[in-house]
Image 1 (cartoon, protein in one colour):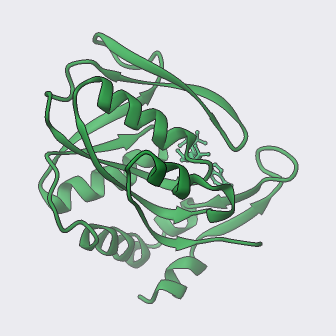
Image 2 (cartoon, rainbow, N blue to C red; image 1 turned 180 degrees about the vertical axis):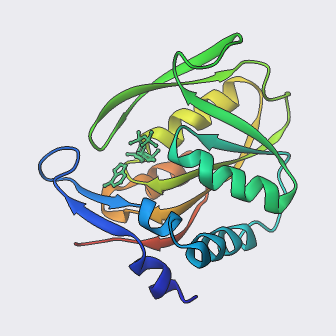
Length: 177
Ligand SMILES: O=P(O)(O)OC[C@H]1O[C@H](OP(=O)(O)OP(=O)(O)O)[C@H](O)[C@@H]1O
Ligand SMILES: Nc1ncnc2[nH]cnc12
């Protein structure tokens, strides 16, 4: 499957969840068995330096993170919306394209010095991925990079991640439309 064919599997829904937002809907890519496998394989192929853990961000990031963890043979660290994890947690507030939220992780999920790759379906403002990076670093982990199916470069998330020393790689972008 070519990158253009993969990109064509993502549906765009204008004005969701708020007027003015062009929502890039990954569910249509997930419905396509070849597209899902091709996206997971292509993203896994970008990881040349195997991390100890894949961090996956609630909720759509769980899909991407699980696929990468299985392909790379890594453990999976769940970064969840606050209030969902049963053990002792640390939390970080953040802003995203259409609101604010709070992410949490188990304080003991990441041993000091563990090398952790952040994964999510989509990078927009970078608020979500940076909140995940702050949590991992507070727990003593080393963030080795970030991987996304989709980047929205007009929203500047990639530049913000790079400013924090985190190299983002995505399979496709949607810019200027
Ligand atoms: O780069 P940002 O501006 O932070 O935006 C990206 C985040 O927005 C979406 O998640 P959302 O919070 O909508 O949650 P969901 O996965 O539960 O749908 C997406 O899955 C990313 O996690
Ligand atoms: N435009 C967008 N489409 C899908 N998910 C998003 N998360 C943040 N912005 C988004």
